[in-house]
Length: 290
Image 1 (cartoon, rainbow, N blue to C red):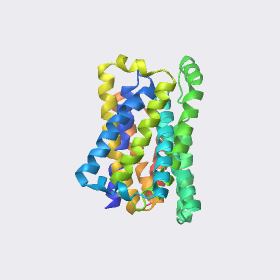
Image 2: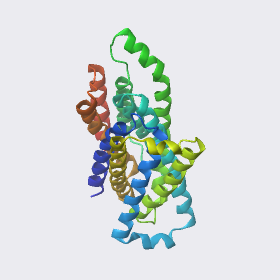
Image 3: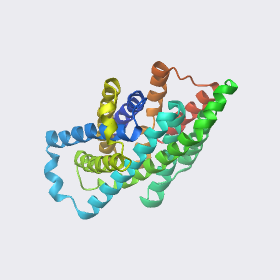
Image 4: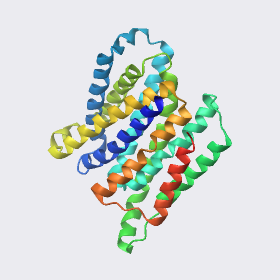
């Protein structure tokens, strides 16, 4: 059953990227993150009420609280970096880099959680790494377009890499944090941490006044992306609770297929032949993890 939750997480995570991209064309990425987190928080706590898991909050131990809070902080940083990268970079380049968190997560799961590191996993990681490299290679384009890509490229690349690093930390900390606590409750607690962090950043940067200027259409997409994230998270941490981190995380990263498909339909972002081969390598490497 946990495998189905992992695939559900992948689908809604893929949809999240597209909806978020639609919602940050004119809206500051940090402000959008803070707004969408409200939706995720509401959805998360609503699920704890529906399932009755909110009653277990008084039984959450000190160690669990620490790891849930740390996981929430890592998630907040990862989100901010990810949506900052999405705002200035192509989805088909940002998402593959973010998915390389799989590599670091599996290494950390081996070192910190004692999960097995087999020859098949090594081959899978090589495929994922090589596939990602091929996907982020520049397409052949006119000199003017290449110059524009070069000017904005460094910024989104750094943010995309940071997003991947903190996403991997999120998975490891989240795995430890949900030991002994119902997954819906764990998700709600860590989402609360993300909300506080996101709004602190908005106020520290002085962007709170821009909330009133968010276009209505973008606000709708931001809220929908928050709803998709909430569903993805609930599936993800439900899968993490029962399954192996080194398997759940790679399956979740298959969201790249959903993202690439919708990025073509919505934004007309096409894959080059090299990028298509890279995508195939990522998928094969991910499936090899099962």
